[in-house]
Image (tube, rainbow, N blue to C red):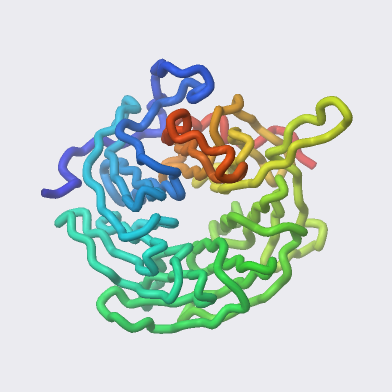
Length: 369
């Protein structure tokens, strides 16, 4: 059974209507709720590439499953299919043509899910859980890049059981992103490695994180004029994001900003939360951050200003993404274990995935430095 029957395109002009969901703080922004969400914490969500006529959303979860929904023009979602791993799923990515989804798991494997046949096959293997997976489409080659807690970064031809290339890293992979021809990998111990992927993957630069605390997420951004990747945003567990250029023309181009912190209450003590995910808007180049404080925020890095912050959800926001046209923002609220086992109440803490119409909210600020 093919998932790709049906032909609804999601135009930028179409706005989501409002739907009302019961539950005061589980959906304070009154956004669209994805039906049949995962049963455990949501680790990753990704929209299908713009090459498909319809819009699909996939989500990986600690319940060991990856689910796929079709997203309709009116904001409704239709569950389409799911695949299972033998351990929690930590990352997902789409092939550039939208026919396959790659799934990285704590079972130490990566599977390739062919959506047309609804079959999944193993395409990568590590000696420890696989934290990141990315599809690389270069003019002369295409491959899957996997980063693991076994301290290796591997590149795979999906037709072979041995990697094309295996790179030994100084530490475990905590986060990674790919936007051809750039890859950025963040490892434990606060090291960042930038790779260039042109003819074949090779190290371009190695640096220490500009943030003092452990990094959790990284997202590459493009130069607005040339549409080529020139830098990345890095989020840490200490409520802070660094904007870092690969080759800054001026050292002052690099900066950090605080986010996902409570306003200092009595006694001037501030609660500081982790930045769980960062996503750049595909049209405007602005960005979203989501955090353990249960909020999402939209930012303009060039004007160095905040565009919007959500109301507070009753659960942390664990991950987020934009669709290819940039008119839907999806985000998941689910427990991220930031308050440990003591803070976990399974009956109350049900995962949700929400979507909102966002094209205008992410427009760059009129203010400039």
